[in-house]
Length: 191
Ligand SMILES: C[S@@+](CC[C@H](N)C(=O)[O-])C[C@H]1O[C@@H](n2cnc3c(N)ncnc32)[C@H](O)[C@@H]1O
Image 1 (tube, helix red, strand yellow):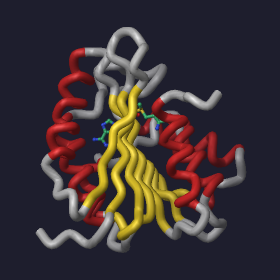
Image 2: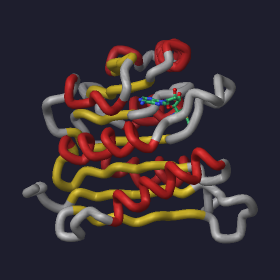
Image 3: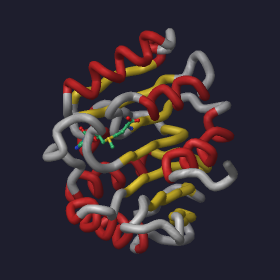
Image 4: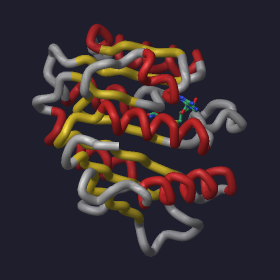
């Protein structure tokens, strides 16, 4: 299908960037499917960082990546993505955010606007010039709607000389379908 969902669109947009990537980030590991995507599409020597605040999510991610024989290139971090600068000190080529709650897990444990915006801000500092960030947001429920709005407002405030930012969503789906934000760093940030 040419028209996919937000996460598949993110994968399609990121894939060409990953072929020569050295270091990439899954900011919300969840069940590990995006971590697996990043591990499968980066060079053998690349490092894939995967953050989540739930041990359950990292356990699932570890199991999936181990089964696919890709766990050696993955660094699992049980911490908030808002603390990314405590772990990464070198530029990254791609960052994925897939907001919301763990599918099949506790729906009360959600990404939150405050920490999400912090994590986006710090991740954009780490992003290499020419690097890509994708953010899948879910405005179909109240918490997700507020978070999506915060993300949109924050991204709209970023300088167009520094970042090219677009958003994608289905236009004929009911109930506020997911939104995918795509951010490309055009040049180093000066402020
Ligand atoms: C929609 S799921 C991610 C789906 C995942 N990428 C996959 O492929 O299965 C969102 C995840 O974000 C995690 N999360 C929530 N707040 C977080 C935070 N501050 N830092 C890192 N992860 C967080 C949740 O625990 C949940 O597992």
